[in-house]
Structures are given as C-alpha cells and as structure tokens.
Length: 300
Image (cartoon, rainbow, N blue to C red; front, top):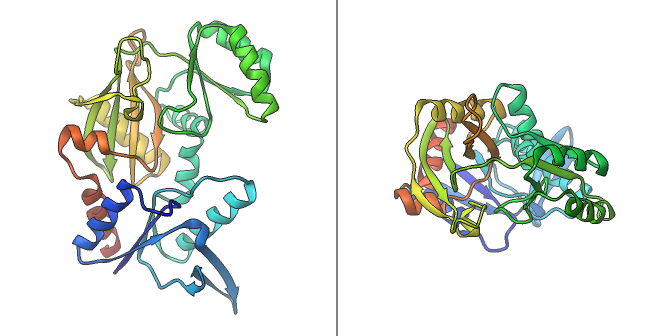
C-alpha cells in the first residue's frame, strides 16, 4: 500500500509531517509530492503520471493538503487537472479536488450550503461598488473579506461605507471582487469542529485574544478551549460534510446572539484544515484519525 501527501511547500509543514508519520506508523509507504513537480502524459490511449523526471509509481490514495500559491489560471488548471485525473484513474483522493476547489471559494461554498438549508451569514459578492455600498449600509457593521484566503488575513470589520468606497476603488484596480458579509455579533468566540468521515474528532471554542479583537483565528492569537457540542451542532456539521462531499474538514461556526431562529451559522469550511489549536486543547491526534480513515477506505 502506498499513500501520498500532496503539498506544494518545499519543506513539509507540521500538519503534513504529522500525516506522513501517521502513514509510516501504519507500515504503509508514504510519499510527499509537490503539485508543481507532477506531470501527466497521454500515450497509446493511456495516461501516465510523472514526478520530476521519473514515472510516478501507482498510489492507493492521495491526501491533498495544498495546491500551492497559484499565480495564473493556467497554473491552477494544470494542477487541478492532474489531481482530477488521479481520481479518474482510480486513486482515492482525500479530499476530492472538486470539493477542495468549492471550499477554497468562500462564496460558492456558502451559497451551496445556503441552497441546501444550512444557515449562513448574509453575504454579497460583486464588482459593482454602489451595490456593495448599499448592502453594507443595510448591514450596519460588515466584514470585507478576500474571497480566497485563510488564517483571517486580509479581513476587515467596517461600519463606514465611505471607507468601503475607498477600499473598493483599490480592489477594482487589482481586479478583485468585493466579498461583503454582515457582521455576526458573536460572544467573543467561534467554534471550530473537526470531522473525519462521519466522526467528530473534536471541537473547540476559539476565544478572541482581547475584547477589542474580533478575529477568532488561532493564527491571529485566539485561545483554544474545549467546546461541548449539542445535537444541533453535530447535525449541522455532518450535514455540511455531506453537502460539500468532503471526507474531512474543519467547519467554522458562529453563535448569532441576535437570531432566535438560527443561533448557529456556518461561516467557512476548510477542506485542508490546520489543527494545532485543537490538538493543544483536546490532546487528540487528527493526523492519526485521518490516516486510519483513509486506510479503511482503501481496504473497502
């Protein structure tokens, strides 16, 4: 049995290293593959894969952690295509590249969830500045986010449409759409739930580092604390996984203090989640859980 971990970093980050060790601990051969080094070759009605200059040996599963920093549409298409062809050739790909792509687009993933009955914040995507200003005025306090991003970087909480106007002009110069979301008044925390298959590995509150800091990302200084899940949160997490066709994910949920009908709202789904805060707070081993799940699927 051979399992690959796919990540573009020249030196594997901590999460990928943990997965590689978990694979080896199971007596399985582990490969670390960078998407930029993967190639594909059509010959005699067949498809062959190369890594660097050598033909890639058959792999039973690939755990995709990152396609890397993409600088052009063509580069994305090439990397997407090779992962998709691995799937079509029978390799178990975790998560499927279509699901990864959907989750990387914050607006598309929230739209799909909303269309399937999952509560999400009111959100607008547009390139029309007057519409963004009008909607934001109705929101009162709102968040301007990058449509593709992580770790809370680049997100701004605003309540001034004139400020939005000035920022929007710069966005248009950079050919960036405006992704504007109603700010949810949360109790100084959000909830991160890590799911593998249909098993909830753990859940934490991510506590804002201070009362004046609204961001609750661990990378932004938030403190992880164990969270107890009620039935509604459990059901919401598993439903989100099934809708987006994910094998594992980190699901971020906020508690809406002003909505009596939907007190929980999904704000983001990460198809390649980090888990350092969850490990620190709960003592769980997500990499081990993930690898055991992947091996079970291979054997089935």
